[in-house]
Length: 171
Image (tube, rainbow, N blue to C red):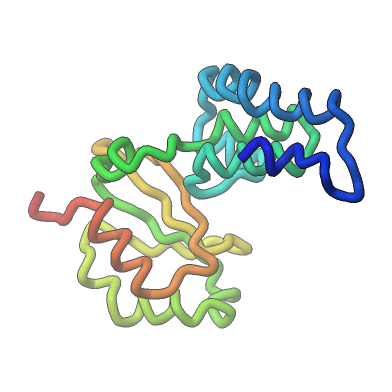
């Protein structure tokens, strides 16, 4: 794939120096930065990174955005792409946080709250002024572990996610 990125046969030729720097960044710098500290979900949300961004998304971001600090922050907030690492994590409960006034814009979320929420006794709904719809995932002590924006999720996506990630009350 690097050949396609540095394709010099096109009308608009990329100079070798720039090509080398971009490839060096992707191959050497990004893995080093991604192995450094991880930020809490609250810190990531404050930086504008909400949900469970995959580290491969940060690598794609680096190809288009030349702001090293932004990419570094992304890498501190991302989750490795490995299915095994994330698929085994479950949470003791969740809070669906949403602004009551904005619910009219999220019919899928309304449908979940009205018709499906009772299937999940460990999931609570919390109405917070001006909050976008998000799931706050809780550990065994009831403390926030992750926060995931669900603005564009369909009802079936919310159901599937909660079935896979949130323990039932009987567990």
